[in-house]
Length: 473
Image (cartoon, rainbow, N blue to C red; front, side, top):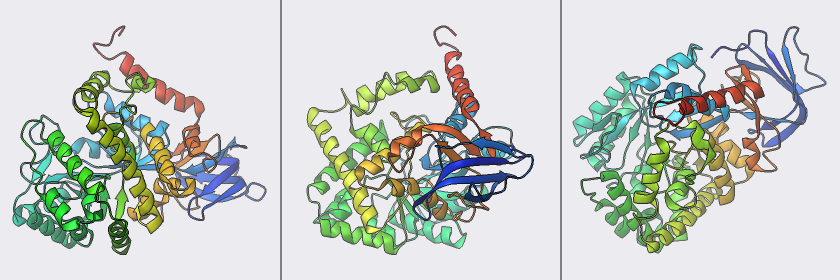
């Protein structure tokens, strides 16, 4: 997107310094040519002639937010829907976790200023075992299914040749191809991230080169009093054809439940210390687990459906009633899921206390999650789990930048960094929910004020209201 050629001055703001862990009151932030050029006391910073001045006294500036786990599933109008929702919510960068060619086209067009959207880092196609978890349902996304070391090494080359920024591994990889893939990725200087593999003990994965792990499921066997036995139970999971993923997830939860009932604080501490020693990051996506585990989370009367594709409410209704909650689960299973969610939050707090690098991510577009909005809910869940409000902010700003090797160019409000900023109306260190109170967004140096931000949201809503088949359209 095009930056403001005349430059910007954001005056009399409180800057949230996510590196130093402090608030800096009455600051001026200067922006020119898409970058931050100065940050300092308003009484000392000289505003260049011709700069557009925004007096923001009483407001707060935080770095642009990063959602480190999203799945943009392009459909009709989605190039005008999803990127706009992210920017309107202050999400100026996303990590796309399932690569497909159109996402690379979106990135090109965003960089060229042809469309408004977040910066993005883009995964390879999912690399899974055989059969792959999503292989038995129609889905318009590439999957590379590997069963041999040779196929696994070839998958890394396919990812690199396709322009992927990293390789995404999935749950059903066998040990031999998994370790071969990691070796080849290291040789080709490709980062590997993704799920824990059912058939590879988690502790073995931690030292093998995978740089981040996603979701708080599959964690529990390695935190039990009988790690070997529970890891063996994980390895025996064998989903039945049909809705392969749903059956797999149900079996994972059964192993989780048994493992949680054998929970060992000593095993958990040892595991988390190993994560720290190996510099492995964890992206818990608590908001996804809330949508799956807690019946009250997925509201079918949510006003934010106005921003979603017209078929989304019906799809969520089906998923909630037949798969997540209602007809798909017994009362006993619902009670177990609620207990599991409490354990997920406790595990995230324990990881944070141990010093594990945590990354904020959502798993949008899982049913129950609204892209862009969901990241603010993730921050709230991280705080409710026990993280400080500053620490939660760091998981969506400087920690993603560090993980991606971009801490010199983004992730904080400092001179020389890219001008991706969010202006909020109240202090997020007083209440993390204040990250939702967005006044303006600066994306790649472009100031998107209250009127333009509202126009972005209204434009997305108009796509839904005027879609074919929508009543009144």
